[in-house]
Amino acid sequence: MTEKCAWVTLATNDSYCLGALVLAHSLRKVATKHNLVVLITPGVTDVMKDRLQSVFSEVITVDVLDSKDAAHLALLSRPELGITFTKIHCWTLIQYQKCVFLDADTLVFKNCDELFEREELSAAPDVGWPDCFNSGVFVFQPSNETFDALVKFAQEKGSFDGGDQGLLNQFFSGWAREDIKKHLPFAYNVCTTAFYSYLPALKQYGSDMKIMHFIGNLKPWLQKFNWSSRSVAEESHLQAPLQYWWDIFLDKVHPCLDSAMAGLAGSLSQLSIGSSEQGSAVEEHLRRQGWEAGNIDYMGADAFSNIWAKISQTLSSPPAQAPPSPPSTPAPSTPPVTQAVVPVAAPVETPVVAPPVETPVVAPPAVSATPVASTPPVETPKEVVPSVVKPVVVSPSIPEEKVPKKDEPSAVPPKAASQEAQTGAKDSKVSEDIGEETQL
Ligand code: UDP
Ligand code: GLC
Ligand code: MN
Image 1 (tube, rainbow, N blue to C red):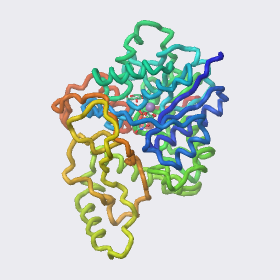
Image 2 (image 1 turned 30 degrees about the vertical axis):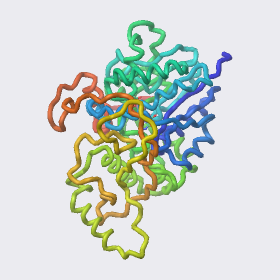
Image 3 (image 1 turned 90 degrees about the vertical axis):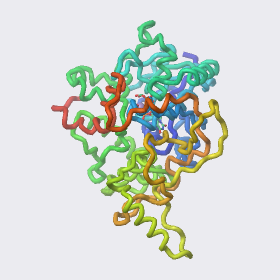
Image 4 (image 1 turned 120 degrees about the horizontal axis):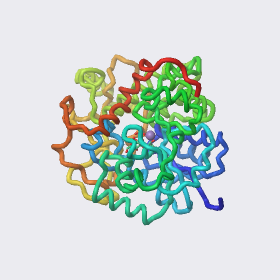
C-alpha cells in the first residue's frame, strides 16, 4: 500500500493522555508500520504535550468542539461526553489518505494494520444497539469537505446521544444496512461490557481479540491498582486486559510522568512501586470530576460544614503567608470567547465539562471542598479546567424541559438504558457477576 496512513486518537486533558500514551505504546509493541497521531486541546499541559511528542509521530492541537447537549448526555449518564465532538477534527488530517480512529481508552493486543484496507466508514457494532456502530474504533478518509459537512450537520441536527457516536451514526446513516464490508468484526472493538453480557462467547472467541475498548466511566487509569504487588485489584475476566494496560503504563508511561502534569497524571507521578496511596489520588480525582459535572456530594466530602471549615481556615491564615495549597476544585474561570459556530443563549462558564444538570445550592467555591480533617489533597495545578479556549458549541441543546430530573423515571429509550449499563456503577459490579476465568 502506497497510501500514507495513521492511527489517530484524542485527549482533551492529562488524564485521557494517560490512556493515549498506553495506547500508543501498545501499537508500537505490535510493530505497526503506520504513523501515530494524537489530537489534543489546550486543556493538555505543556509537559504532557512534550511526553506525547516522544511517542506519537504528530501531536496536533485542535479547538474544543462541544455539543453542550446536557439533555441527551443525561440520557447517556455521561455529562462529560459533549466534548467528544472534538473527535470530528480527525477529518482535517488531510496529510493522510486513510486513518483509523481509536478512543484513548482502547488497547491494542495484535497488529491490525489490515484495517487500513477498509473503506470509510467502517466500524464495529455498538454493544448497546448493534444497528449503530461504536465510534471508539473506525476507519475514515480525511477530507475537509467531510469535516465541513459534519460541522454543518451537527449544527442543524445535533446528536441523538449528545456525543460523537450519535452524530456519526446519523451522518453515516447507511452503515447498518448498505455494505456489510463496512462492519468490522467485534474483535476490533471488544467493549468491556461484553465481559459480563455474554461470557460463553468471550470464552469461545476471546483469544481472537485484537483491540479492547474500556467503555464506560471506570477507565483503566481509575482502577484500583496494588502498587506493592504491581497487580490490578480486580477479580474478573477483565483482570488480564487491565493488567496488560497497567504493565505498559508502569513500564513505559509512569517513568515519564511529571508533578507539573494536571489531575491524576500529576498525582500518579508522585507514586512509586511500594506506595499505597493511589486509592486516595483516584478518589480525589473522581470527586473533583463529579463537582465539575455538577454532581456534588452534599452529604459527604462536599458538605457545607466542610466547605465552611475550609473557608474559615483560609480566612484565618496570616495575610503575609502564601495562600494555602492550590484548591483542588477551583472555580471554573470564564475564558474569552475565541470562536463560536452557533451562539448559545445560556452562559457557558465551564469550558471542558458539560454544565451541571442541577444548580448547586452553594456556588462552586474557590476553595477545596475536601474535609479539613483529611490529608491534604494531592496538588492538581491545572487539572482539566484549564482550557483557555471557549468550547465551540456546534449543536443546539434540546429544550430544558426534556432533561430528565434526577430520581424521576423518564422516557429513556432502549439505547440510553443499555448505555446506563456501561457506566462505572454497573462496571464495578463486573467482578461479582462473573464466574470462572477465561484465557484471553
Ligand atoms: N475524550 C477526551 N476527554 C474527555 C472525554 C473523552 O479526550 O474528557 C476522548 C477520548 O479519546 C475518549 C473518547 O473521547 O476515549 C470517548 O470518550 P470515552 O472513551 O470516555 O467514552 P466511552 O467510550 O466510555 O463511551
Ligand atoms: C460511545 C463511544 C465513544 C463516544 C461516546 C459518545 O459509547 O464508545 O467513543 O465518544 O459514545 O458518543
Ligand atoms: Mn471509549
